Length: 64
Image (cartoon, rainbow, N blue to C red; front, side, top):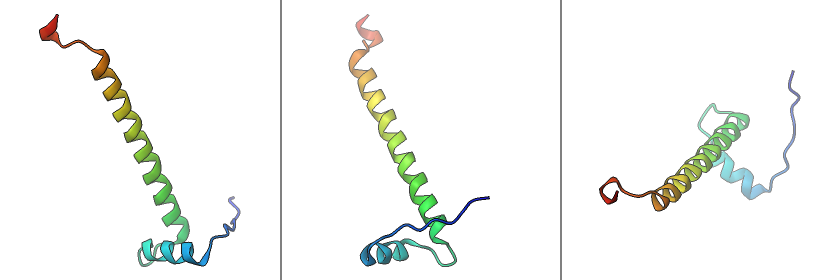
């Protein structure tokens, strides 16, 4: 069973979150969506960095 937690935010932050929230969506659901989106963006950035590093270190087949 999960316990509810309070996260103190400024009035400005609360207003911004409220504007992002869809009708009927809870703040918990909104924060879950934002966290999921952040993790996805971080993963995409890591893959992009790996692809860029690989392409710099690899030799094209035409050059072999």
